[in-house]
Image 1 (cartoon, helix red, strand yellow):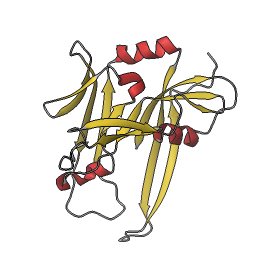
Image 2 (cartoon, one colour):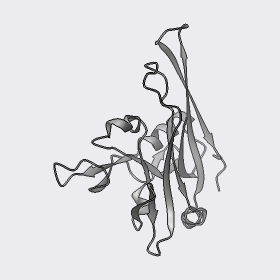
Image 3 (cartoon, rainbow, N blue to C red):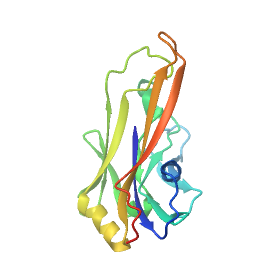
Image 4 (tube, rainbow, N blue to C red):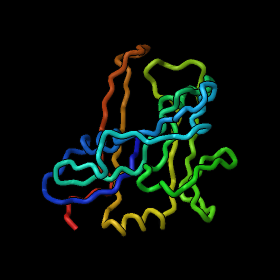
Length: 198
């Protein structure tokens, strides 16, 4: 399951599908390490820059979408943490985090303001990873980015925006017992999304 937060504004009755909104938010952009030295591959040892081919906000039919998070595209992953290649770190988009500093404390990635107050915190988890799994089975790993409520509410209030979540739930079932071939089905939903013009 993937849950992506976004802010939005409704301007009319032409609303895109739940899947279209999910893909627009998910593919908005990504952070890429700007390697200054060839022997440093860790994504946080160098500056990271944000890359996107989209406008902000994304205009799709009669909806303005303001993505709030983006993934970091790491150039190298520790072999013992290969699961992070599939679902790595996430950070808030620079449009809302440009005045925050990245720090690491007790192994946790945090974004702090000028008063050293933690605004965003990224944490991840891993359950029951094994040496051998079926090829198409999911990796029991995930991560989440939490934010101070007053910080995000103030951004939404200033811009007259509402907060919603694009959700993708993936189901994988084996074609038959003992098979490594799977059938994959995705379901898309919008949480806290209202079509009412405010």
